Amino acid sequence: MKLSGNERLQLPRAEAWAKLSDPSTLGEALPAVESVEVDGADRFEATFRPTTGLGATSMKVAFEVVERDQPGRLVVRGNGGGGEYALRLQASFELSEADGGTDVAWDLDLHLHGVIRSLTQRVIESLARQQVAAVLASVASPAAPVAG
Image (cartoon, rainbow, N blue to C red; front, side, top):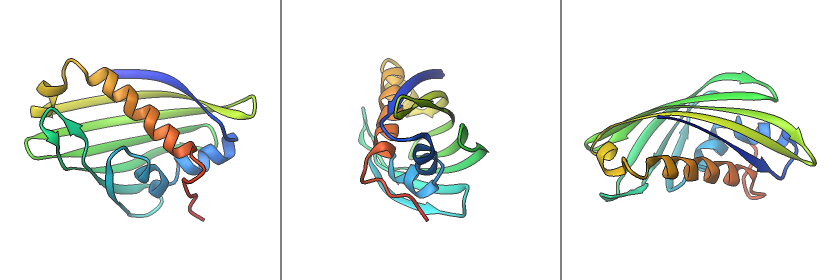
């Protein structure tokens, strides 16, 4: 499934880039995240517990930043799952200056396998859009730290 959208962040592009490209900040921005383990500047593993038709199910996903073009483009891949399901994704973010903030054009290529695919078939597009918006909102939050 391929999705795309746009979000406006109320922070300068350089700050948006610093937060979005930091594995720790990006991992902590995932909805329902329980833990994040950073492995260098481009890799992290996140354990989170999203709510699905099965209830809250633990999921572990390894992420890697596969493309950086500071301060305008970032591409992240993820692969993992839990129980009887798996997911694979690639998310790209294009950042551009916008009246005191940053416009983020995003694309998501998401592949679900197993039980989660059948349970979320009717709502996955809406859910995926909500999740990307939640990640970007969390990144833009004043409480989101920037690794230094």
